Image 1 (cartoon, rainbow, N blue to C red):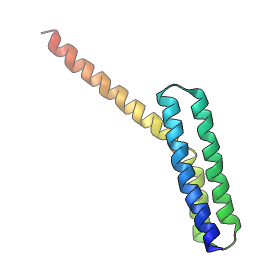
Image 2 (cartoon, rainbow, N blue to C red; image 1 turned 60 degrees about the horizontal axis):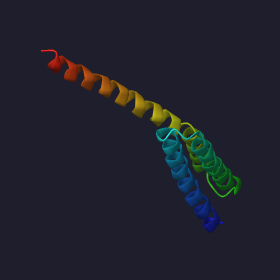
Image 3 (tube, rainbow, N blue to C red; image 1 turned 30 degrees about the horizontal axis):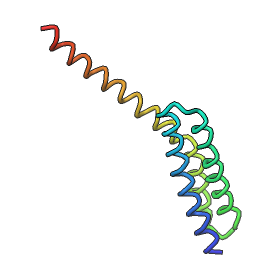
Length: 105
């Protein structure tokens, strides 16, 4: 049982990383098919979480933690993409103001 949970945990973590990576690459290179492909890893992550929970071996604390993590991580790549692009747009705007401010003197 412990070996199964460890394998599912590995799958959970690996799938989460691949989901984030393919999602970011899809957005960065403007490839919608890559973003859609990333959702397969989100599904694999959710299934791994369900598999760990379904074993019945884990305490209630771990079941809740895994369930919360699985749901939260479905939204983290999109949220982080928004944060990073918003931050860099504001930063780019600040740099343009500084550059244009010096050039107009």
